Length: 336
Image 1 (cartoon, rainbow, N blue to C red):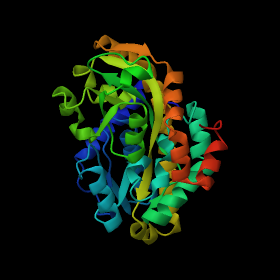
Image 2 (cartoon, one colour):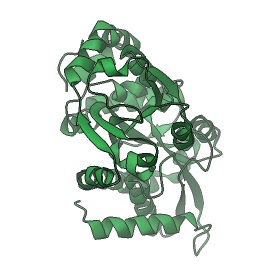
Image 3 (cartoon, rainbow, N blue to C red):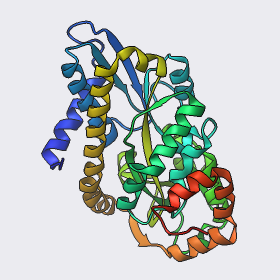
Image 4 (cartoon, helix red, strand yellow):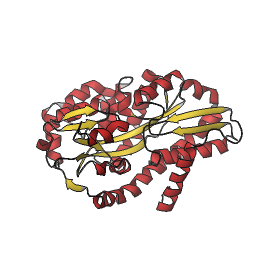
């Protein structure tokens, strides 16, 4: 499911067009809203919209799903509440944002747990992912589709100085996305993390509410953080993904045939979006450099040692419990 630039641009155009669609040509039996906080041209949104068109066709128009990107349905906590109440039918949501409902969902964000993407997907498509999905469904009452979307490895940008060793993080006012594990990670590293939503982040950087942030390179480019940040430090400290969540009452109304179609098409879209990231990340660093950002490598060993010294892994092992930790360490080296 490889992608070339022309195909991705075409998909992006389709995603933009979808925002203006209010109703399909023929009234559908099932009208679903799909919310998330990502830009319209992010691979997760582009590939979702393409999948929705295939789902509509495969169900003979019975299912129509409309994407609502960039948090137009509300904040992430608000969207989760809407999904659980039935006001919204589908979401793409990071595991860390489900922490208050199902703490195990944030295990994907354990710092330096996954050495590479291949390990991530072996774990998430394997036993670790199964444990996470079961926990979300049991505690959150939400249907979780099998494949996790990739947001990617997160790197640090700053307006004041490059981050070369963990000592450079000391006292740094850095934005982190809401989630207990992300806050604790940067506190353990010696920084001063502040949780801020993605929609408010550009202004917060511009006005120096915070001086730094951490996100995958693609989002750094799409959100135009190069206008308010100077340095990109390639820390790759956390991998982040998005689960596809569905209201259980809606899911149970579908029947096995429609459930199968949705599961199949969303899985295919998720794999395609993962491949998109490989293609896009090859070019985005050059694009950011041309826009004036300065890249540097990071002494990751100093980061990892700081986490060990802060008893970070011991703390999160106790938080996640032996079953999940065992599933994690099936795929990665012993942590801590």
